[in-house]
Amino acid sequence: MSSRSQKEQSAHYALGCAVQTLVVSQHDAVRQQLVMYLSRSPALAVTGSAFSPRAIIDAHPDVLVLDLSQLGLAELRAAIEATEDVGARLIALASLRDPRAEELVLHAGGRYQLKSAGPNGLAEQVRTAMVNPPCGADIAGASAAS
Picture 1 (cartoon, helix red, strand yellow):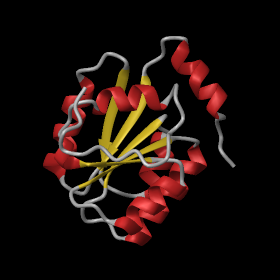
Picture 2 (cartoon, rainbow, N blue to C red):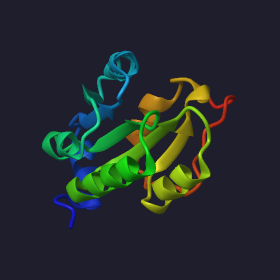
Picture 3 (cartoon, rainbow, N blue to C red):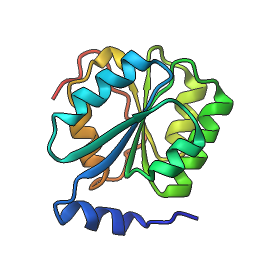
Picture 4 (cartoon, rainbow, N blue to C red):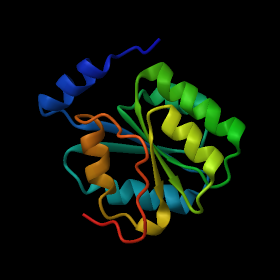
């Protein structure tokens, strides 16, 4: 069961509270760059961590930005479970399209984005994840920018 309902999360964001965002990546440099990039948005309170389900549960984020590189399907399933346990939204970043990982993310109500799209629009996706529910096959290609 989720410790926070989607309605409570949306109300939290609507009151002007920063969206608690956790960036999880096994690559320290990637994690640091994503945290720095997303931290530019005053609407986001961003932290970073290497992968572990415990890190997700302890951080209790509103939104999890998960770098899928170096994660197998078992780790992805564990991340999805931890994300669901805390009632967070999921945005998964992939270097190459993996239909199995994509299916798991989308089935869990998350967003699946290819890194080739660059960081453009990622902060907006994090902000809108709190207001708008994920919309199924949300794959950003190289031409996506906002």
